[in-house]
Length: 162
Image (cartoon, rainbow, N blue to C red; front, top):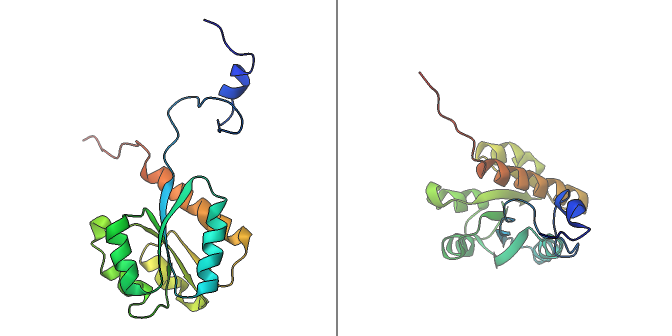
């Protein structure tokens, strides 16, 4: 069996299509399916733009009010939702109350009111973005989401022996 001269280097780093290496170990997980729910057009567009550069996240849909968000969550089955707290019809917290807990995606709450951060963590949000947020703060939130999905998908056993 012959190996390409770069095969050792390729196996030692994370493979990407641009590097020309084949993935070492298990296949890379498919991108996380993302929904953006925000009634502010500027904030909505900013999230879409920031997500465009993230290859491990795939934007699958959007909503501009709470009722649309509930419908889109059930219809599109996103794994992560950027959810504005203050939207018409239903606020972000009411959107989450209307989702069956077994079908509820991970959530990063967004709002202009920093005082709502405590409520975000009460509902076990992955993170909380206060508008306007920077690209760096957005990346912190995405890294927390990455950690959440790594932990959720980890094959760790939680059994206790007697």
